[in-house]
Image 1: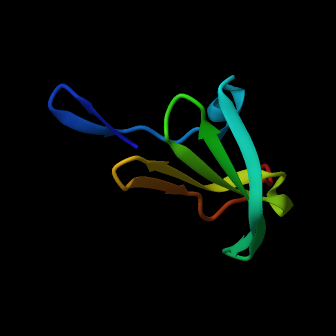
Image 2 (image 1 turned 90 degrees about the horizontal axis):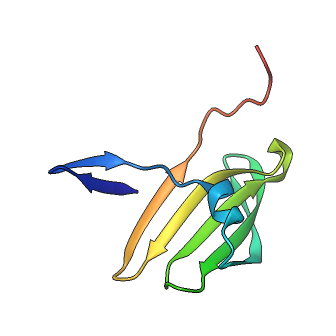
Length: 91
């Protein structure tokens, strides 16, 4: 998501855990999909106060990490954040 600050645009990441902690959000599992070889559960999150919808694609084999997050806003605006080259191994 981009945020305008002092006549410039900065990037603000989509934060799945922060959305999950909000009180006015409802979650619905809407299907499954494969993304980059990971079997994911597609979860829709909706805020009661707005028409914004989030879609989280949670990879079961990566300890339920949201590897793709999409924010769909009114006026046909959409923002997507995708993680790639993921490793949960410590170095």
